[in-house]
Length: 243
Image (cartoon, rainbow, N blue to C red):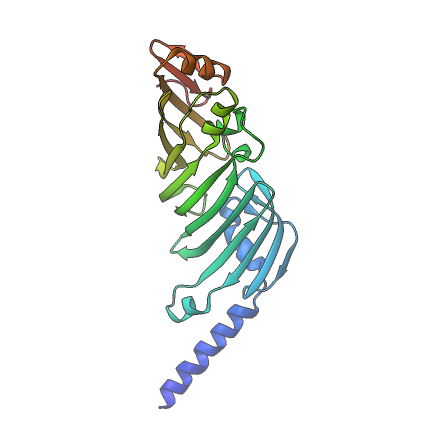
C-alpha cells in the first residue's frame, strides 16, 4: 500500500511539473527541427506562441495544449492549432524517441503557401485541404515518415478562368529521401497530369507532367507556364530538373 502511495505521489508530482512548465520549453525542444517562436505565453498545459517560424515560413499564431490522457498512457501529446491568414490547421504533436511527430493534421492551406500552386493564376481564396496528414521529423527536420491526403481545386479554379475543365488535384504525402513531398495526380476531360512537389525548406521544387486531350488544354497549360515536350506539357523548377 505504501509503495502505491509513493508511486501515486511521484506521478502527481511529474504531472504537476508538466502542466505548470512554461510553453517556451516546447519550442526549445523543437528548435533543432527548425521551429522558432517569437512571443511565447502560457504553460505546457495551455500555451500560445506568436510569429512562429516553421521551416522557411512564419505563421501568426500557434496554440498548444497538453492532452491529459496521454500522460496516463506515458506518451505525452499536445493538441496544436495553427492560425494564420494562409494556414488553418489542427493537429496533435508528440515526441517519438528522437523524432517529432505531427499526427492527424486537418485543415486548410492557401495555395499561395505551396510551390507550383502559388504561381498559378488561381483565385485569391484557392486552397489545399489536409486530411489525416501525419509526419515524423528527426531533430534536424529531416523527414522520417509521412502519410495522409491533400486535395486542392486550385487548378480547376484556374481552368474556370479560361472555360477549360482542368482537374482537381489529389495528393498523397510521403518522404522523398529526407524531404517532405507531395505526390499529385488529376484527371479531367481536358487534361491528365501527375507529378511531385518537394517541400524542402531551403529549396522547394516540383515537376509536373500534363497530357492534354485537346488543343485548348495545351493552350491553357502554356498560359500557366507549362512548356511543350512532344505530346506532353511539363512544369518544373530549376532545382528539380527533368531527370
